[in-house]
Amino acid sequence: MLILSALAVAPRHGYGISQALESAGLQPIKGAQLYPLLVRLQDEGKIVAQWEQSESGPARKVYELTAAGHRQREELCTEWQTFMTAVETVSRVG
Image (cartoon, rainbow, N blue to C red; front, top):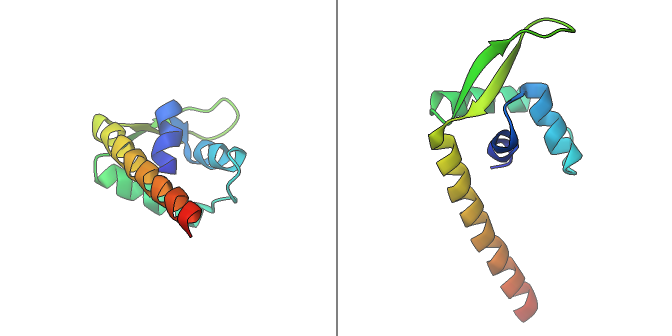
């Protein structure tokens, strides 16, 4: 959900995704965790990737959400809200 949300803001390369998540307060994400997930999301049709030339170095793969990725993100966000509401309810009762 977080990766899809980072890409909903704008297309990003892997490092940009990682930086967006870190700036949101998450622990750094290693490439060994991030890139296999990006490949899986691409295989599932949730994101597409294209190579983009960089002015400061080699070309980078830039990832972008597809319509299916936007739909999955919305579904996951709804599920997360439901979960958080349940946690808050149980916390008040318990």
